[in-house]
Amino acid sequence: MPELPEVETIRRDLQGEVVGKKIKSVEVRNGRTVRRHPSAKHFRARLEGRTVKSVGRAGKYLLFGLDNGETLVVHLGMSGQLQRAKSLKEPKAPHTQVVVTFTQGGQLRFVDPRTFGELFVSATTEGGAHVPELAHLGFDPLEDVMSWDRFWVLLASRKMRLKSLLMDQEFVAGIGNIYADEILFAAGLRYDRMSDALSAQEVRRLYRAMVETLADAVKHRGSSLADEQYRDLFGEIGDYQGQHQVYDREGKACRRCRATVVRVKSGGRSTYLCEHCQV
DNA sequence: ACGCCCGCCTGTAAGC
DNA sequence: TGCTTACAGGCGGGCG
Image (cartoon, chains in turn cyan, green, purple):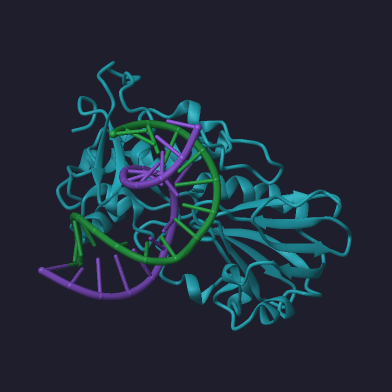
């Protein structure tokens, strides 16, 4: 579910909530969530007694920097949520998979019905700046500024459909199905255009659309669809779904030209577009 | 190297 | 009112 804007929203809120807090205990209620570790006990042992020094993000991954130089990595998968509980007495939501209790009181709870999400502790280097398990991730569209020429070279070095490339985490980290469609609409480009066949103007439009769409979505605290599965740290829904131009708008009028937004299947997944505005 | 498929899971909505 | 099928913000692997 959550893509870069949702993860970044959670990260910003986490900074004020958990930095400086010491982990008293960790409860693993579903071992699948910590599957990279040999055991739940092993995962717990690497967290208990540690203090959270920072909260970062790499693509769709949250990175909790710990006082021993290691990093707690959290990926929300399709249905994962982090919930901040001020009191231990608050009833636990169904599918609560991991509970972190702080010595200063309060908990951080990982809730994930589909269990595609995961948590693991990484023996990071360079003071937590480098996570070996995430070395495959490409550049971060909001953190890593680059020139259009450089972006053009990267695009042309792959011969892929634009949507596949935007969603390829090894190329650029953090874009998923919602924002790929929104970015391509903003750029006026079809999902099936080839990445090595763009004009200079199209490359600039795509880069601008990528940065501005994601930044705008962060300002609106991410997208919550009809099922409202995406919730922030405090259980509030995002606001960006109201700004969507094409995603989940099949059959509705394009906000720019009034043509009908269509949905097509590509690679087994839904793609929404305006065939008049996107060429 | 890329496009397409599947599996991993649970919940919900649509279809018959 | 059922039962069955399709689909969902992700990711990794296998195949042609």
